[in-house]
Length: 342
Image 1 (spheres, rainbow, N blue to C red):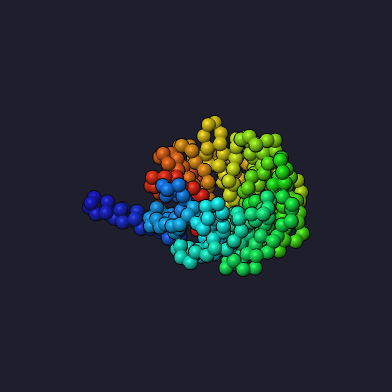
Image 2: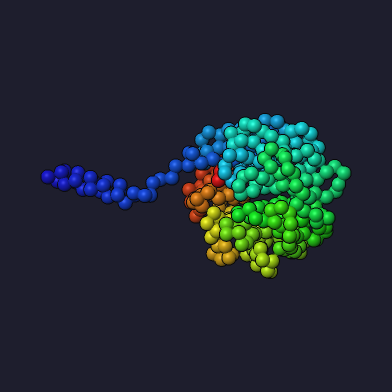
């Protein structure tokens, strides 16, 4: 009887566990993908994809130096920068997510910072001709047609980012020594407006999902390691400072708009932190080695990042609270710029 009673209790416990977990399945990351760039040992970088559980690593590029992969919002394409045609030039390319159909979009001297429109039909980028000392902001279709100049700042323009609704493009402009700005233009380049004029501004911007704010990185005093995160409002009101310690870079807004992940160098190490959208409740997520380049999963439940805790910079994932940190790559050289497939 005691054996039968114990068996019945086990069956009841198993049934309770099944019922209590209905709607809460374990997340399968084998079908989610991360794109990144990795040194291939010959002085060049190539672009790879890997499943978010560490399986099925695939090299997508083979020729030249291929940098800064950027997923299209629909997950069908990857934009990147390559010097494959001339080591002294850099151009914008687009390929399918499996590496096929690699298409050169620009034919300039230096093109960089490809940024996707939210409908995945256009890209913004900076273009510098060989006859010029300044780069300007352009947009193009996916086949390289209809290239339109968007900025006329009489300076060197850099990183750009489309608003989630596709109505605006924000970009960083380097006006000269100690004078960098964040501008906002309509998607066709009209109605330019200055959003921020806060000293030395890094080439990095991230929009809030509600289209009302964006974050930029600035050192208001000098080029020293004291960059802080600022929240700019698209109505042009005064930006708000979000961080006050360390050297902070590469912010990423969470998909739900509630949090911001970023890397920060403090106390002789670089770690990943998360804050609320208003700068409150700062939490350090990593502690081992140096860590950086955080990127959110589409559901906001995970982050991918790079870490040198095992010698070379490798690609890792973790849950959004910093738990379940897992190494994905085992390359003999450095990897960087991981980005979760939308």
